[in-house]
Image (tube, rainbow, N blue to C red):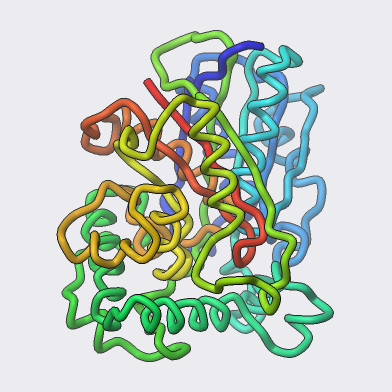
Length: 369
């Protein structure tokens, strides 16, 4: 089995890009990533969660390649909800490990702002069970609020403790040139923001953003770049109403145990983590699921000081680019380890957590120099 390296990458600034089509965003980052890698790609793995529902476009990868004049390259369309980007990296990784290809590109792209906000939320809710959850009005936000309420009560935290997550994310996002929001916020701003679903407030929600990211992966080290040490994807097939505990990300815990073991890395070795925090409570639970802090200890750790988590600003500041996010995270983490675009982290190992739905599927990707 061959080793897999991240040899090139490109990010499009997250935001509202009404002047570009979804294929324009994807083609732009793919072109830059190929130039960055100085390598020819043999396949394209494309991740998106809204291309068909929101942008009315199938065969997106083919049209992206066409716009760049790339012909006879196989395309694989990956959909795993907002965990699509991580799933696409996993698929590409296994193809390279097996020797099917030498170099491939992974592109994540979503453009939710092409539709109205009520349509955005309806599309986002399709990650829930259409017949037994979405039909009765449940949304990812309502589930996140329930999880937050139970967590705060169980571990005797105040809402102010959870609000610190948004403050940290904005502090990190201020240094990310690709972030949607590049300004710090005060704790009182988060605490006093509008309630969206008790106890969650406006600053607990990552804004939906248009964007695209591309990574070129190769199984021969063509240039300096970190190695993907392991990948694992796990699912949680237990309905929300039947779970033993509502404040645990079970799919993440299983994926993290497996990925870290395969990589020979412990949670203490992790110098940086990019985790799924579409809602602030998910970010806190992700730290616990990865084993970086013990169960119930995330907000206490947050209260004590800065944490090397989501140096990109996470979903809250970088923006929630839905199915593209996992590819953003891999490129961001690679650059953090290399000291490119971000300050070099003190350590050689990092981890990505990409999640689809409300703990329905989690991918963990361990990266090291």
